[in-house]
Length: 230
Image 1 (cartoon, rainbow, N blue to C red):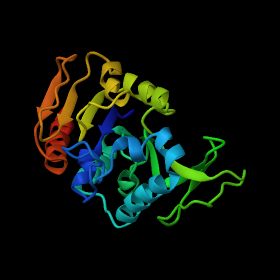
Image 2: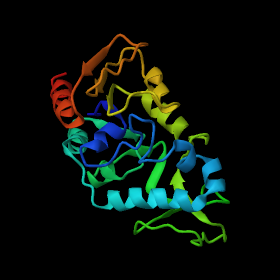
Image 3: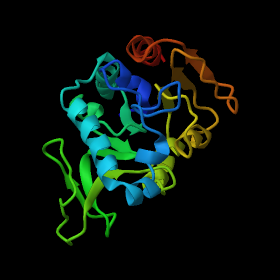
Image 4: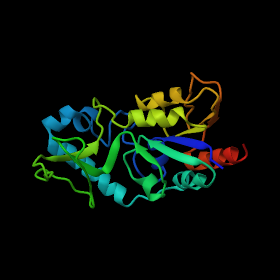
């Protein structure tokens, strides 16, 4: 018997309980830096060394981070559902939790890519990427991150998954970053959406929304119980 399809859209809030910063603080800064200084193509052109160091520190922090209960619940739901995780996060905590089907909308922290060919992507073993580290084509390697102002290459794939969902969970994201936030609009109208976040993250375009105002780990326990009872 075919399992119902469960799509999970995750954001920085799910990784916060694993000790990873949500990048953008209440003051609008990412770890003390302006977004335009570390996460845009212009920033890379102006000061690639600063950009590389910023992501080196994120990687160094991420090496020792472990998935929390929320990540593990999503993995456990694979016993009951065909689970597809669409994440806005660049960390690898869903992978560490052994989730099988993953879509990284904003790239992956532990990958680098050629500055000449966006499709030439390389896995990283350690945390350092420095000036002078070159791709096989001779170009400087850059983080495989989708920066502000760049196209989101996996967006169409994510839309296709959302459009065929039987259930949708939104966890740890404020639904303020586009185009990722628009994915809720591609889910079929009859599908219930479960939103897990301590803040009230409203999905105004939909009626069938269950709001669970909890941290990701507690909220995912509640949603898993509800889903299994359907």
